[in-house]
Length: 102
Ligand SMILES: [Mg+2]
Image 1 (cartoon, rainbow, N blue to C red):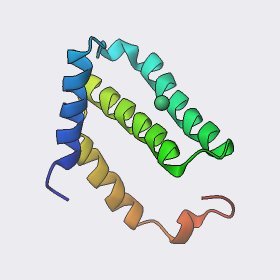
Image 2: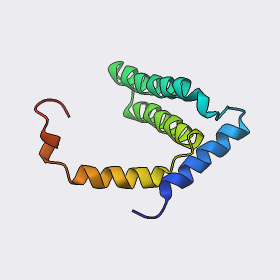
Image 3: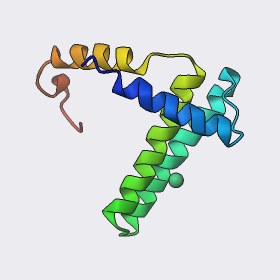
Image 4: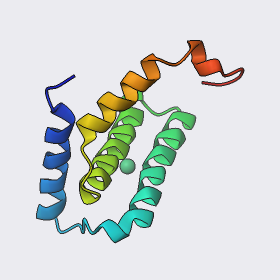
């Protein structure tokens, strides 16, 4: 993939964060990582409570937004990282040689 779609979304999230007064200081990494966890937990809780899949999805998008904000704060190239990781994963064996889960 070479269309740089992720970096465009990362820039969009950063623009919103800046406009709404959220700090993007890289030293916030611990806080930002924790906030990503909170959104995944919110998705888990919504699913557990039988809420709509749209609500579960909304919480997952919150996690994606927070991940994009952190990638921006760290100055990382989301598209390059995604492409490299997917290429690596395509080379891995069936179920990545795991016995359980996945
Ligand atoms: Mg949320």
